[in-house]
View 1 (cartoon, rainbow, N blue to C red):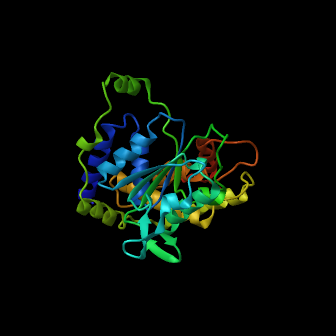
View 2: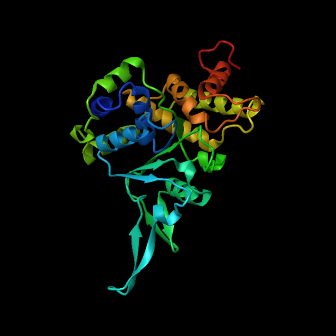
View 3: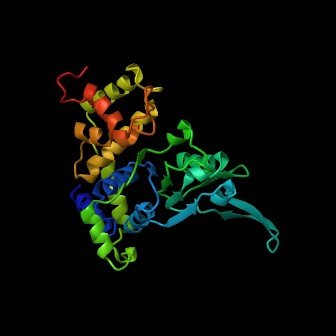
Length: 309
């Protein structure tokens, strides 16, 4: 575990050289990656979504690809296509950009529902099916998708069943004044290729450490109380599913790993809860942000709350 702690600390340090004042988002991205999930970033253009993806992919030592989603993008443009090779007199499969280890799906809500579904199915199954033949995706396979929540014209909103394929959802937001001044002082963007990258063996050792993270019965009780509250409180249109609970477990374990522990604490669950629940829970009365939803839940089920139900 100590070796993994050092490796993760180095990842965060290297990423922070380029992504200024966003340590929480870097850590959450790592927790999601090692927890086997995918990320949806909802934010305006120009706040560093692409920079985060490119930097993480390099420091983690992963192959990287980016797809700009547009209304005319077809499923085959992402997955690949069989074509007839006249020289070989046979059909050959040309792999699409999804055959990478780290995929940035930029502005995913600009593509048609059919194209969105093709990617989201690949995310869930970790393979694609072309003409009845299943082809496995590279390992590891990690997706960061982005969307601008303030633009609706020419977009196709992701239904709740598709949103559920993303383990967490968060925004980067504007940098602090101090961080923005540091960014403005730099004459040019930092070269991510100068950052230290993990080797395959180092990456595998961190994955091995993740598998040893301990989850106590008390933590499972806590998570089940969270589920029960979202289902029985009458505050949300639909409560959290069992799959949501499994994802919460995975991300909480990832958060513990990032912080150098081999066990999950209630604080780990509480910290990642807003990012797991925001795109899954819709309030019956008015729209609430991630913090408001999490506060509402934790007010009733937080382990340290004397008024806990």
